[in-house]
Image (cartoon, rainbow, N blue to C red; front, side):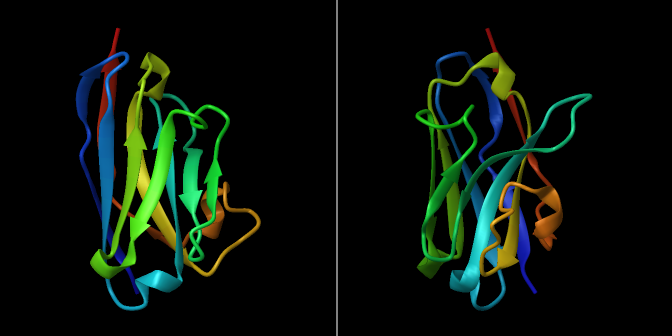
Length: 124
């Protein structure tokens, strides 16, 4: 069982940076794949980035080159560094986790654990 708590969201201007954190409680966190999803008003929750338990990295095209996902298993932490933010990055960001890895890593349904979300608002 894993509990996830996101933090680090806020109101920023286009071009700014933010670092989101996902803090996990529970054992064996190093065996989990963790992903970040974003949900904007009126839209479905969409994949942003993921880091596998082997630290392989995966990005949506909208995030690649601007966002970096990383993990510190000793601290049970996963981060999402977001640079050059755009208005379309606005939304509630959720971290999600599952044991091991799934080739369907960008799909909401493969994750068993979710945080409560943190709001990111990018103004122009």
